[in-house]
Image 1 (tube, rainbow, N blue to C red):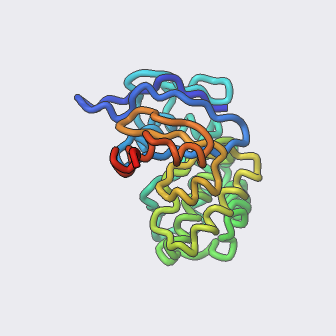
Image 2: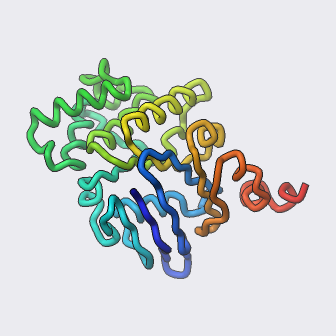
Length: 242
């Protein structure tokens, strides 16, 4: 479904992402992890068309999308969430989702279709009762769910979740994990950028690890978290050697 070939992003003398390659199959949930500054969010921006690549190619659903704009990529079925959740505070939850649907799917340009789709998506994430609530009045968790709903409103085949569990309290993490599985159960492939290892091991069948912009490991979560190079990247070389 998604094939990333040698993507690189250089900002002046800084290489933020270095020759990164991987593939995501239909129906998979894959984690993208690494310490702060390792290039995870930059990789998401490159894949979703928010910033241009320095080198490399990206293919989605059999088509090269390397040079497409973000809205063009979204309308092909690849949508994303953002680390910083910034809904339109004075619009309702439903209005926020309708905007996401109209941005991400050309067929939802008519108000009636966008509204029906928005209500369906809010129900899918458990926010149907909050449809007429202003975004500013939602809890942190509800705003996170709303961010996911806005991405789902574009009817994606592949969803990129960028640290959407950040800011949740420990009791809310299982609900977030359940939401990921429910989304995947709709036939949507998912890539997750996340620092909460419990969430990664509880959702992902495969994990890709970045450090300083380069891929240092890839495999099953339980194997990857025991990898000495991964332990070193997170905790330092002396921990990996013990």
